[in-house]
Length: 213
Image 1: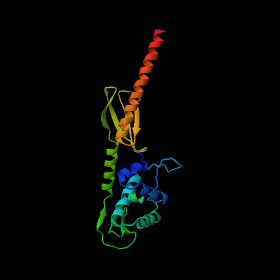
Image 2 (image 1 turned 180 degrees about the vertical axis):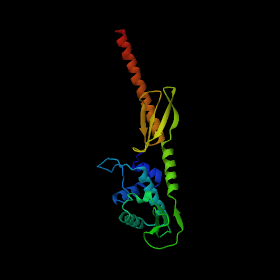
Image 3 (image 1 turned 120 degrees about the vertical axis):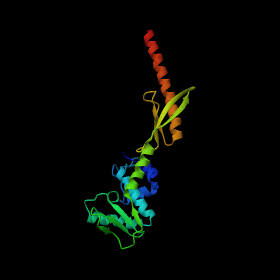
Image 4 (image 1 turned 30 degrees about the horizontal axis):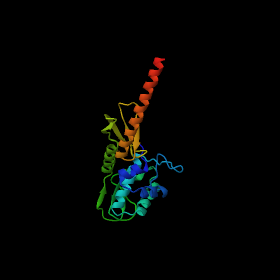
C-alpha cells in the first residue's frame, strides 16, 4: 500500500507542515515516490509510516528532532547495513538520550550520552497500531442513497493514495465517483447514478429506433 501526505497526516497525527518539513530536511522522505513538480503527489510506504510514528513518539517523550537526527545519522554511519533504523531497531529513551538495542540484545548503543532509562519504546505496538488504523481507513462502508424515488446501495472505500474516498454503486456496472469527505462522496455518487441512468435511457431509445427501422 502507498500513502499520500494527507493520509499520513490522518494515520500518524503529524501535521502536513511537519511531514513536509521532514521531507525537505531529508529526515523522513517518501520512499515510494517523491514530488516531481507542481501538482505531483508524494507517496509513502508502510515502513515510512513506522518511521513517522517512532520519530513522533520520541519527540513526544522530550527528545528534540535535532537529537533524533543525530542518533539516526550515528546509526547510519556506524551500522550501514541498517537502511531505515527508525523502523528496524528497538529504541529506549530517558527523555534526554536515545539508546538503541542492536541485533545482539545484550548490547546497547548509547548514541548521545548516559542517562537513566525511564521509557522502553515498544516498536511492535506501534506497528500493530498503524495496521489497525490502515485497516479502519480501508474498511468498506455501505450506504443507501435515493435517486429518482428509487433506493440504490452504494459502497464507500478509503483512498490512501489520492486521499478522501471513492464510492461505487454495484448494481450499476461502472458507476463510481469520489469525494474528500463521506458526505461529498455520497452527493457525488447520486450525481453519478443520475448520469448513468440517463445514459442507459438514451441507449434504450437508440436500440428501439434501430429495431423499428
